[in-house]
Image 1 (cartoon, rainbow, N blue to C red):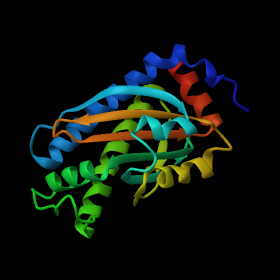
Image 2 (image 1 turned 180 degrees about the vertical axis):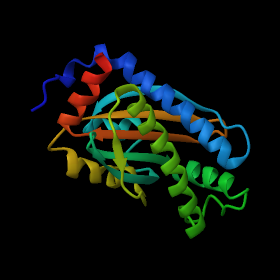
Image 3 (image 1 turned 135 degrees about the horizontal axis):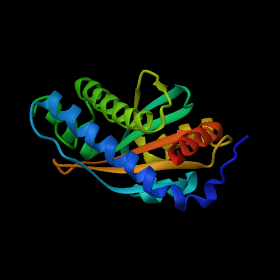
Image 4 (image 1 turned 60 degrees about the vertical axis):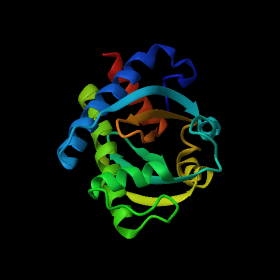
Length: 202
């Protein structure tokens, strides 16, 4: 049973924002190593939201987005997702592919989907490492899966699977130096939220 009231999250905001900043730094380093050039990842927004508020926070539930989704096990259980608009997804995939991505008006190719899974894996791992560093808790991610659909349809997956266990999620906006925007969503179950926030208090 959860002991921390997530409706009174103000006292945790600073440490949650620090998780976002450390994760962005880790992601910048990892992506720079992969691409062979400097990559800046900034975090202009870190928020704890209800499931019903997420669509509006990321630009609307009807926009077409690419979502990289994985489940978490270990000390921290739940799910994690990295969301990008279709345009941002193509831009980042194109960078990883040396500029050989398809036109923005076209569907994602198999190679672009593979590149996005790798980018999503790097981004989510960077943030999970920051959470583990700050809390001492382990989070073991599953193999990432990719879905391209309207934002509302993509968000329905964690909402259905974990909405009954926790009505709050952590939303971290990422702005890349290339101009692409992405959103990281962490949905721990209630017991995992207790562990995370209790560890951050110490």
